[in-house]
Image (cartoon, rainbow, N blue to C red; front, side, top):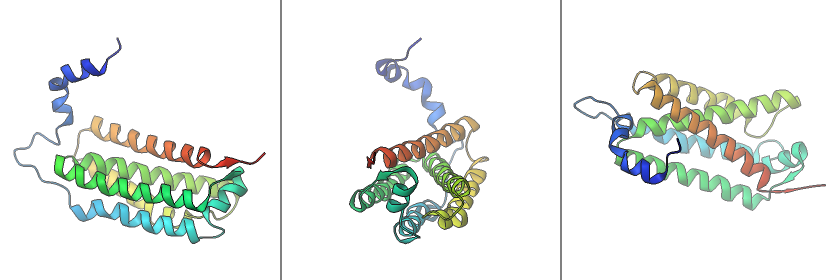
Length: 182
């Protein structure tokens, strides 16, 4: 059975309990400062990718033969920071910050694992590796660990899968957003 957008809209009332933060009588959001760690650490990671080693664009070219201009790299990274900030504000207004925290936790964890595996596979430092190992992997793990008791398992799993999916999309954009050398 395929579910169309119209079916989804008509059956939204059935989905409402799944989308609720909790069934508690009073809503208590997680600390906002925890959410703002993500764009702040993104800026740290972005700086390391830009200035670390040979720089991410040269690293991507050397490893994968993909030329990603510095301007395009900065545009995509800046867009990422802006989207995270918008997501934080919207999630706080709509009262689903835990869902966004789980997405962001999974996203930075996946990015950290990707950087680490790539560094191990190629036998050396890659721009962004230090911030991933020291900041993003721990931040992602701690965030997901703390949320496991605050939200239903299905919501946490869904948010985690979305975070991993976003990381996959970002990786594809990085690889396809530049031009391949022959």
